[in-house]
Length: 341
Ligand code: ASP
Image 1 (cartoon, rainbow, N blue to C red):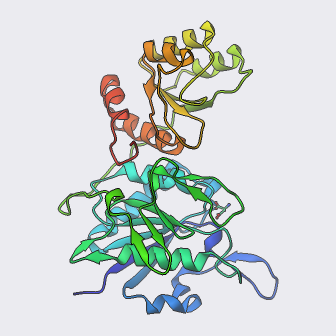
Image 2: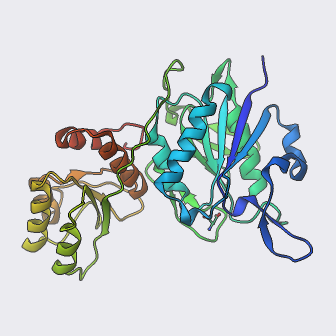
Image 3: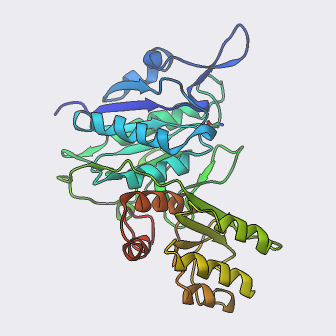
């Protein structure tokens, strides 16, 4: 059997930096020389090719234009590689990885995002383990079928479904969590897969890449003291195409009339309003408390147990497809890529 071919794509972020021993400063290192800097990669049983964004970015500068660029790089190389590893800054990795899970329909090969909290050139770096295990996961096959056939995120000994993750810590090596879905695999002495958690698409699926992402949307976090005037101002934006409300607990908001009226006016314009919880784990359950009954009545869409990152990406993706308002409501509440339990 041929050795698996892995494409390593560097978008930017801490992982790709190395210390200049003369100046002591961190600088981006040349990815075409990756094997020279990390000779361990030569021990892996796969062939690695690398590609880098022309100008690597800190992931806080990430935007849908770059998601499209990434999706197109994967599309262009999809037939020639067995797996993809994307090196990305951790700050917005969950957004990009969630977006790619929707943009790449019919994925049947591993697409693994990873990064690190310390640069690859740092003595105590977490980058090497994250990178090496991500490549191993991307290269794993059972017979001639890839072990992972979805978009994943590997960080600090755990492989997660990408669209279930959130960055929860800016300092710890364990920077990500997937509170509503178990890890797909855990790496210790052995790499142990959670077989039941993996998506199992047909291997003969054809990749369809969606590149229209609607960005005229709002993500509004509820807080005690939010002014009617503030919300009214935001919702009166003429170009508004969709709203995500980050609500309290299991999807609750104040039941003061002004809030319900403003949302009802928005929905009457066929602008979808989605409810996700601002809790890191758990689900929206509209109707459970008196403070969410009205949301259900006026037609607010339930984000169920989706992360905010996944809900945002899904809204941009679904609005980008140009489907009707009713189809949007129906599809949003349906799991398309394993993003809802
Ligand atoms: N600010 C960096 C970034 O997200 C942090 C990291 O790489 O983890 O690009």
